[in-house]
Length: 280
Image (cartoon, rainbow, N blue to C red; front, side):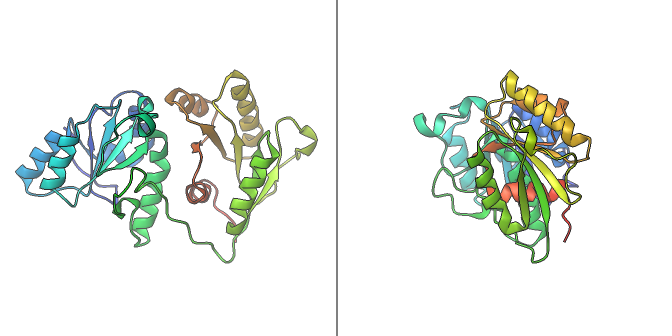
């Protein structure tokens, strides 16, 4: 068992099997997770809380498939430690559970691919003295997933290159990002005449929009990432329901971040801030 929590701004424990698949990928990606206490089950967490007479703020619970965690275990821990938030990190096999299953209640529930952006946004909120997303009332299955809107700086500017086949996708990104001083340039993969020989000097990041990363999309993304890499511009890929193998493939071609669609604008803006310091 691993203990210690020296780098995270919040006292959190990892619960369940974080050693394989998408959960292992998350543990590798989120630096703070290396220092979190790891326990096998919610029952083990409750027993440790009783032994120590102290409780963490969060339990980050890996849910590999629907039904792997009992509602009775969640309820028992909530009675023993009512101030501890349970965050269910739902794996790939759980994608349809909100529509067709019986998801756990009294918890924050996140698809696994939303966790990195959500976690980093929570750290930003805590550092600014704001409430983290898990502090809200858990009155519906989507409670606690929303990322707080970042402050709109008065003096900041930056350009964002967007490669999207559909101009409407570009227009939506442009509309969403412009209030934050981010100005989008459309450079779609099928319109080479719109490409520029070099990005503007204040280019913050490049965004590539895709769907489920088939072979053709992967080839296009690799070419885009290589073109941006020549100019030192980090690339964010927007994908539908990404799988862990998609994340691994994008890492191999130097895509620095994968964000699932539908994305939260607040999370996208914070990711851009983190990857590409903007000039103001």
